[in-house]
Image (cartoon, rainbow over the protein chains, first blue to last red):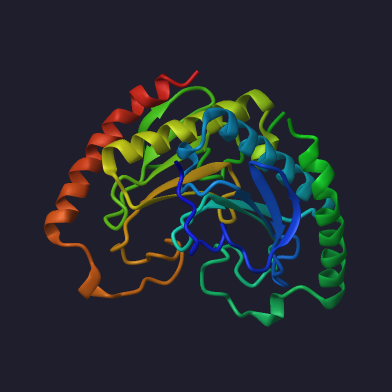
Length: 150
Length: 150
């Protein structure tokens, strides 16, 4: 029996922008003006590591991850995509799928690194607005993208 | 034809501890006293994103990733495993497979975050020595672990 701790914020979320879900996984939108389009792919079951999942669920999870990455590239056109399953703070399997741009405040470091605080190189309001619009398109595409993954 | 830039440090590595390799991928040991057992899984082909790989290579890469994670758990017993494909600095597909302990200098943040610098909670010399020994066992297991992945 897999434990579902009442204290786990991914088992008992109080506020999430769920873009798609089924019985195994869900995708939520992460509101972060520095990384518009950021999403997380979250296991519906409370486990810590990928290798805790049955093999069939691992396969499906990775297919979802690649489908989401592909859709992110097609709609958002970021300079790079970062994929990460950390879970040090919340040991419930979840993937960060993060669009990165060369002029975001952390590039070329991780988004968990100290920001560079270099306003001279930050993106213009116009490009920010375009990214925000593309991010909205990307988020809207998620249900069809995930539903197409067997 | 996929470009292999001479300037890419993963295409033309000058110093790597290669634990296993074939024509698609290689695994290298990362010497980091704070994360003994750290390894990277690197594409032999110069591509930036997972979705640049053919589907069959994606499947094999994820199988290698899970096999390495499983072996890391069995030999090292870290408190958590972090998996990440970032590539902002070196846009050549590679995965960081990082053992984490609750008393490592960065926990519960990423290893790219600012260290906590809390020597009072850092692991003892004895537990560090045990981890280093387990990390050696883990690295030695990598060739068999990867060879068993179809």
